[in-house]
Length: 532
Image (cartoon, rainbow, N blue to C red; front, side, top):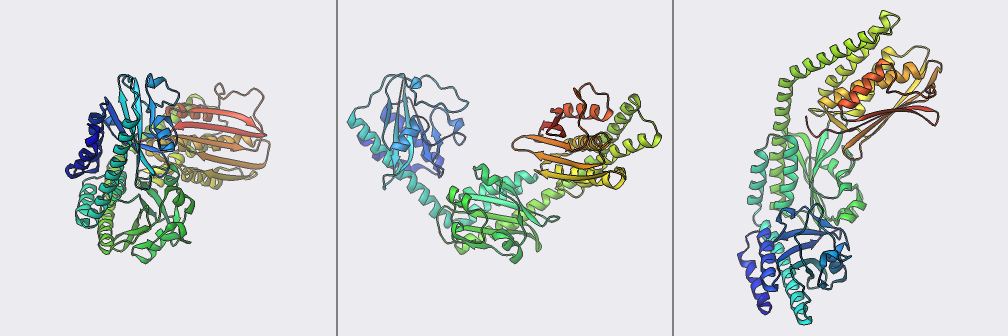
């Protein structure tokens, strides 16, 4: 049956309407002609990892599993370019690597066949499993490798045909993308759909959307389908800077033949790492008002055809309209929700006042009113920022800077010379978390000023914010008076620390306080909410 494999494989090309159909047919056919119980097909990515593209046994993991270079039996086959055989007890083989989060059905033998192109480069592997011992004969391995080469040629041919057909069917691709993004009312979903579908329909390696932050004059990366985390963390671009800034300034698409050799392009190292070459950057405009830019990259140096450019310009206009419409819907929803949020915040103020009355240690009415005033201003600052920041999310750095302004302008004692520094990630928080963190920061800043500088008359207060993954860390440190020996914030009777402790727990986080290298350091860590 193996002798007829190439003919069977070639017939698949005629039947397949999509690349997914071709790959699924390939793994099923490979099972039949090799007499295997299951088959997975993994293709080699630009970063040398192997990505699962089709499977007869774990189809739910397709597109979600990637193996590092050289990892497992598959990695060895891809690296050496030779068929790898684990004839018995395969899952106990030292080279065997499980797919993350998946328990395999028992299999006795595994054979991994490399797929090679015409230049003998490995483009992927075929993983075949059997429930019984299996030691392929030399001629059988030769036949399997020939099938792997035919499969590689079919995949490459299909993808090339798809690219060619896509060039002649820009209208169909454009219609698909614009129809889909127009159906969503949510900004983040629109942006992600835009980059995902544009990359897929126009066969781009990477697509990104940057939206304009008018207050800062920056283009901020808001969506990309690129898997590389380094790409998702690319910095904001100033207007007039780089290719994206030029597209906004000139209000027309900017084309770069090779970003790896373009002096004005920001991020050459990442472009080389990801194999990016040609680029087109299309401005997103709404009635001559800039919204942002759509940037598309290819893996080869090539020209962008006139019909391709025209289709992307039309797509950009539709995207700009959908983005603006989503923003308006969000603002309308926010207005409807505002009275509810204000009511909740007034209730929070009332709760704070009750705690304040129970734990009253004030010597003067003015002192009590100042504390109350600072807490009300902390909540008010979040509402003020909400009207100026990005819709329903508020930046933590902006909150800290606003609170410091309140402190230095109205509540800082005249005989104290204290400098404030805010640094770190301007992580955005939902309205609920932003309000709670405004109160936390307010108490920690007040605590640093009132208790850290009782005797010291000058010094520094540093606010540091980090959010490397899904956890946010905030430190408020001061160089004033050290903490008393054996100080324990969990048993301290200070009202402000009690409020911080309670709010940290409400955020699902934790609060710590310590002396560190001559500084008093308070620390709050909590998981960032994904929605509200």
